[in-house]
Length: 216
Image (cartoon, rainbow, N blue to C red; front, side, top):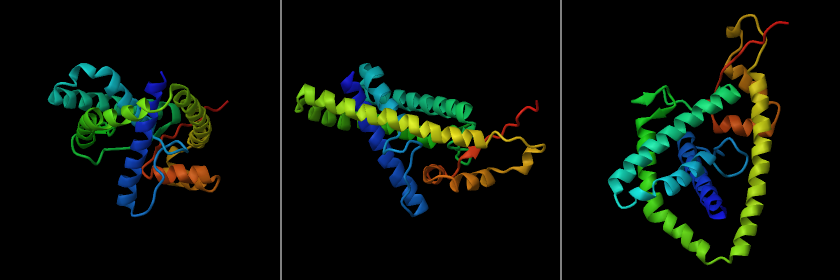
């Protein structure tokens, strides 16, 4: 269990670094990417964990492993986008401007990236990171994982509370929903908290889905 969590955390952090590098390069300024406060993106951790656990039987065939990683990553990204939109009433990323996209939730280029990352994960990173664990006493390793786990859970609770506030802001009681725009709500949120500003800067293409309150 602790090794599985180790894999999850390692790749969540690596995914965060990759996102920061890509987005910061595009925006030409340092951007703290991710919807959690800490330096981790769970979607990469889950993707790596699924590839490590579920695709073992394909390790001997790089082509099949690439295809399965492509499909697994695509499904995970699509489902994550859908669930987060339903929970928070917001679209966190949108690939509508990419060629060969599906409902703006996934695109061919990002899915190909999952395929290649699957190969690098299995043949390069996993052997390296698992070798490191072998040199750490079990009791020390378990304690470290417990501490990181507590920090991670605290981050999730705190971040979800912040995101829930954004959800409440998008649930607006107006006669004409077109009177309120996403940019106006974002501006109001940025004035409330440094964490809101960090989140909105991390997701510049965030689209809020407005819902009208039912009159009593």
